[in-house]
Length: 457
Image (cartoon, rainbow, N blue to C red; front, side, top):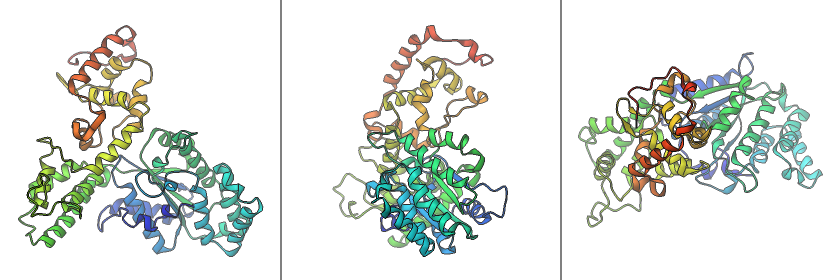
């Protein structure tokens, strides 16, 4: 098992949760789907909660898990994590046993006996089988043989962070993700399976393609975008946190941090809850932060100084990075690319200023930069949690759409971006080289109808 992956484990005691009165609409949508149970014949048994990195998917699912447990309808949970916790939370090998343990405890005594006897019969060899065999023996057979499936109360299995299921030496990450999704789809399409399945992940290519094809018929997608007004929730979050800081320091909330600063912080978050949480954690400080009287330190020490550091980050570079947690996320996403260096070159080319539209439209970048078919998706596809990579023909005229301003700041800041940083000159040289390299391969007819005027490098 991976006990740390269960939603209320001690390993997750500091895991993010939705603050009261925030993400209300999202939670209502999810809970209404859960509560529908089998009463709605058209209701789909899988819900996929997705959205850009840092939009609060884990906080939402953690809160939903707590709510369902209080209502007595929570069957099992598994929270993957590539950032923290035991290695078993990053691998698939403990996934089925952890679910089976929770379902065994939930079911009747007969269910428990069935699972344990199944394990004992072959000396535990079942744990070396593929996930489908494990799931069949430890979950499906136990449910069907003991009558647990006959229960009518709507119950939910919650799986978070599927995109963080890590790579093992002999397999690709995408293979493990698809294997997990396949067994969950197998369960959801079995009429005797009594549970609904709530899954959250970033919209990575493999996961997105699975739900667009194999899982489409029984999956409802919930995308965390502007429809749920994240700015309003982030503003509430800032208000609550800054009020606490002011109370602790004896500051009048009307004097600090000020409306202009709050609006700037909300705007810079771009709907990204991880940005807001990281900003607040930095401003609050930590036990290892310099104390206010340690004026000899070159690092900001008071909440006000830290806030000014955040607000001034765009205006002046600094050797001290107040957003380590956020940058760690961006580094992690970037390093999942098959060729991070190539991905960074495409990113920098996409952000180059050109006369007229400001940034190069997608079709121009494809025409000029692709040295081989499909290179754009090879370079940018794994970054689909940070920018839109599925582009309709109508949007080929537009530049790439990035989800977060903070990511653009990251790739343009040498200290934050680190070894992957490219200067404008380096990016321009690469674009120029690609221009001449691909000159003979271009086929303008495939881009018929798109204007060539007012677009150049």
